[in-house]
View 1 (tube, rainbow, N blue to C red):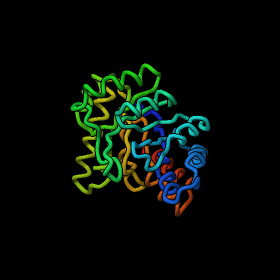
View 2 (view 1 turned 60 degrees about the horizontal axis):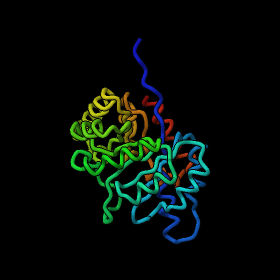
View 3 (view 1 turned 120 degrees about the horizontal axis):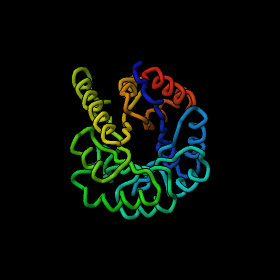
View 4 (view 1 turned 90 degrees about the vertical axis):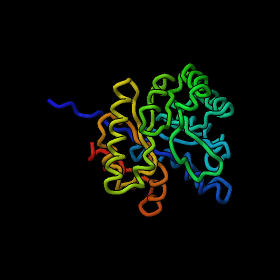
Length: 245
């Protein structure tokens, strides 16, 4: 009998609820309220990126999320001493180390875990020693997976932004790269996740990769909520993921 893939988890990123709140200041809309609604709609976890410039999620949001959630919080963070201190203070279920540049609109690519190996090593160790599940947001590249293995990271999240913006044969080739990378990671005891740029139209082929255990999706779901409500957008994404599996 063929082995069926494990259930695919959905992590909902609520950063852009905070982006809308911060556009006018004040407390509305509340990203924590959005997180609780996301869980009700079928999210298995919540992702939030505390950027160094605090352009969306703020420190107090992390504290409130930790207090309010009964599902895992995945804290996306840059590899800095400040962010390490914050992660160690709040002890989220997981911390995903992402590259960060102040001038970028959003995360533009994967972390160079191979090139930054020496500086990442103490951060990955400190997070792991605190019982925080470390993830590295990387490209689907064997060199980066090798660095994750050597760093002892239990999880990698593959950047799907390039895949999301490609078409035709280019997208098919990128999908093959992602599938091969997921297989390589899993073979080496690392749990593969994926995210960035995923929509109703392009999620199925990524969701169908059997080794991928979790998708983290935010911007599209928050944008789609304008038209069909947040619960509706998450339920439809969950449905598309389950169909692909």
